[in-house]
Length: 263
Image 1 (cartoon, rainbow, N blue to C red):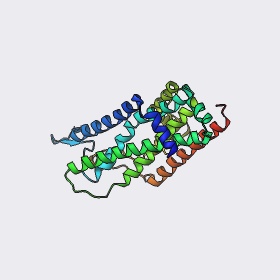
Image 2: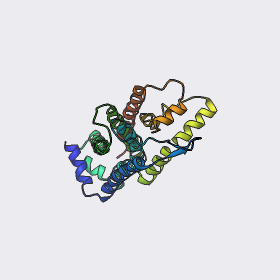
Image 3: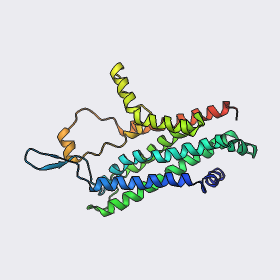
Image 4: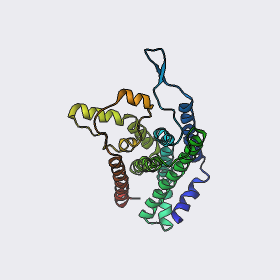
């Protein structure tokens, strides 16, 4: 609690933090509301129209649909984590914390609590949106599909942990944010290039892609039946385990870096 309070004291008057968290909330709700109201259809030979993307926000489908777009909007909170950590090095407050009695591991663990706390806040927003959309839908409440809440938690830890690692290693917000955005945008491109030249399918093993795979692209049931892809899908447990291994790796890399760095 001491470390968590320390982080809160640093952030409670920081306007950029509230702006980024607000952008996450607003755009997360708006994009899902837009999908609910949209009709992305294709014309059939009979003159009708088939909706391609799922806009079913009733229970239990609401959790999976929200989860897919949750990953998109998470980038705002990732940037907040990067700025919070790099500001410690920019203004040298990390040295002051250590002079005041924190160990290097205490300093690291204060940021671990920051990541965990922000992930819980995002998850609460996800839950609130799910209940609002779900109860406004046609179906009655059911606990089916709520495993997606845990998937969202794992995804959040992966994204925020990756962002924190970049911030600790690079110590400059501009460079860390640029590399973060570049990796998010071009991760799939890198995977495709590896597949092209080595014929290795590593899509399940890349840092962010493994947790992205927890949520399928939200196609409508009609579209899924129409394309009916063959082959066995990778078990969800595999994505969860790989994501958590990466989270542990981020922690290990940063802890090793701090133990060797001249603060």
